[in-house]
Image 1 (cartoon, rainbow, N blue to C red):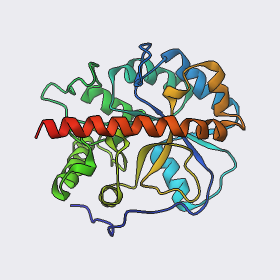
Image 2: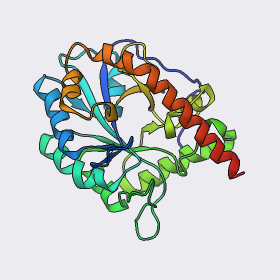
Image 3: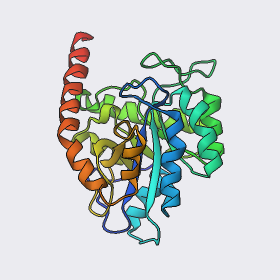
Image 4: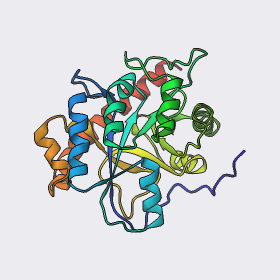
Length: 271
């Protein structure tokens, strides 16, 4: 069993360049909160590349923040939660063509056929897809086994969700799994302390830009569902991104609060 780091809920970046972490779920035209138009993915990434940004994985960006080493170029990372099949079908070819390594956070454990169970009515990547993603230079991060609200779990169950997710994915990829994303974005000091014992960084769903002073176990991301048209895409590489994110903060907080209430009500109903 790997040696655990001392339990501490925070580890803050001291210096280095900010890292823009883009957060996606499914790549499709449905228009719901989990979907993003496939046709805009390449445009969003190309816009950042053309503006001189350097693409890194989530763990790569966190490592730069941890080391505090400044680099000449601004950094961005592409991340996908839940491992939907559309990410492989629509996203992988685009990212491979652009030479951009991306991070996919996988929850669940493949069955004997290598399939992950569907989620939100959507099919998901198989073990073969996950292995190929890592083999091509992408990053595979953990996202728990059952996708629970981690703040509601006992200490033993909390660590089990993280450890089993990590080990299952390492068995598939043959590579270390060092990054994590909290299901629903829910976390507290106890959950962050647990994540620090298993991973080198963890992503939240808090809207913002990771940078000097950021907690590496509560990395902010840019929810790309809020950038589903070309006018908003222009904000990604422009000077008004911070102002736009500030405008989104209120509605984002309310939606997360409603989501937390729904998830907890469902958890109570299941006993």
